[in-house]
Image (cartoon, helix red, strand yellow):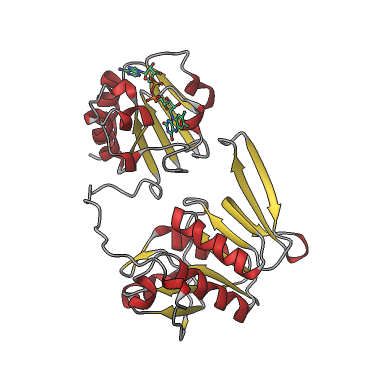
Length: 319
Ligand code: FAD
């Protein structure tokens, strides 16, 4: 069975949920093989095996992680050329998409970004589904040239355990001088909020201009649900919430199981970042707000009245 390479998304060996999703998807296409770059592999080993990695290609050392994405793209190019995998899957972060694009160019391969589904297609092809133009169109594609390189949006698969005894291969790789053109001089972890990462969260509760700058009810409801907090651009531009929490065309793209929009009108640019959410719930006091066009459940009401009641009801179910 052909190998399917996935790039492990991790922080010092703590594997992100997206990696388990990629391994789950990879099993549909062939034999999942993880590419682990950086330190902390001991912490990652168990998780990779748990989600079905048959093999792990490991590269350690500052030579790769001290620089921006080019060494990773160069390394993956070497692996793709050496192993001729059935596909290369990478998580759809800004960094992941840049790496994927560089590998596609270097290997003369077709690239699909932001896939929401990947599966085995006819004649052994890798079939992908994308949701484009703010979710207005669903596009089915297959890569016809080279190795299919696909970036996959977080939450596109439910991670399924499939324990495997992963073999490990340490890859002897030294970045070229060209790959070392941009060095990371400092990086600071962002302050922990105790909430899940916005793009990976199963539930996102977002607030907009309708909050009037008071995100307390939005945060309380998010915490009751174990959700991440997002915001519209109007809210972040007003300085009410950090820019890193902006959902939309010029912010983060989220695709959670549940998206709750509170005091958000539903501008096309906001929809672009959340329309692929599985279930959409809205709280807005204007029943004519355009966001009601795409909701599964809508509450016409003042968020300062509705959210505390909803929070209380959720808390009550916890006993
Ligand atoms: P508004 O449109 O002002 O809506 C506020 C809503 O709150 C209204 O529907 C109102 O009825 C409701 N409301 C008011 N008070 C209450 C209350 N007490 N209880 C309940 N409901 C209440 N926007 C993004 O979000 N993300 C982007 O990435 C983004 N990118 C953009 C890129 C470009 C190039 C441009 C031009 C715009 C972009 N925008 C983006 C901005 C976008 O066009 C909208 O201006 C923005 O999304 C509006 O934010 P909002 O819904 O919070 O505010």
